Image (cartoon, rainbow, N blue to C red):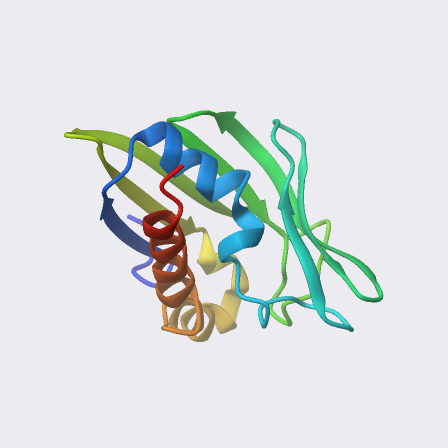
Length: 157
C-alpha cells in the first residue's frame, strides 16, 4: 500500500462537457495557470502544454523557457498524464519524475467530474510530507484547480 503522503488528489464537478473541460485544461492552460507559479527568473509570459504524447509542458518567461516535464498520455477528452520533473527545490531535473493524472468523466447533463491526482510524491524522500502539504494547499493544487474551475465557468465557448 502506498504511503499516505504519496499523493495529492482533488475532484471537481463542473458544468461542462468532458470535451470542453479537457480543452480548457490543456489548450487553455495559460488562461488559468497562476502567473506567480513558475520556477525561474523573470515574469511568466505563457504556460504551455503541447497537445501530444511526448510533448512538453513548460513556461515561457521574460528571460527564456522553463521546463516542467513531459506529456505521458494524451487521450482527449478522457485523460491526461503529465510527468512533473520538478525536484524538491522546484527546479527541473530530467532524472526526477512524479506523475499528474487528470481524468475527465462524463456526468450527464453536460457535467464533468474532473479527477486530479499528483502521485509518487514519496519520491521526494524525507521531504515528501512537506511537499505533499505544499502541493495540497491553497497555494498549491487546491487553489490552482479552483482557478481552472473558475476559468471553465467563465469560458462558455
